[in-house]
Length: 259
Image (cartoon, rainbow, N blue to C red; front, side, top):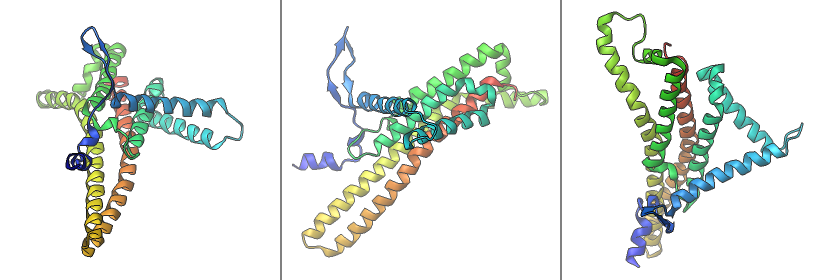
């Protein structure tokens, strides 16, 4: 009983990756986990939502069609304002990336659900995908001129001795910061939610045992938990936006490395 309560109260237990069913192929562990399930759930919800909204298109849009059109326009304007009209060729990628992160974050806000974006392996894979596209397309489109990104024109020669290393380090740090920002925000927020919820439950239990003052503190802890939950909802949406708009900024460097 004590062990089960400890597991329930442990703020890190919610991030544990668990196997839903075993699968071994050629000695490689390909077991289906809760992380894979919730990523698949997020992708399925995106496809279902936008599929239904698109299939029921009307001149006077329904509520779901309006939300889908607002989401479409929001991402399109983000790409256009950051990377220009030429950047719209990457619109499908940015659109998919934004809503994948957004749905993953929002699913994680459901009690007892698993937050896939709270794992560095997930956010790291997304960040590496972004920077790989930037490098590959930048070299494909601009050739060696892509490296002008690290040596902006117009500076004195001796400045390049300092500027180039700084720009190279900054570029290498992009996928690291992109991954860590999303991972750290979702991880920290969910830990705080679990701590305040557990703290409030323990205080209420102590109050029922006869310590009324702890019940008052429990109410305050519960109210703080609600406030943090509202803040975490805001952060969940904001982090999806930040991830997407930084992706657009990096894609703009691939399109216009000399700027």
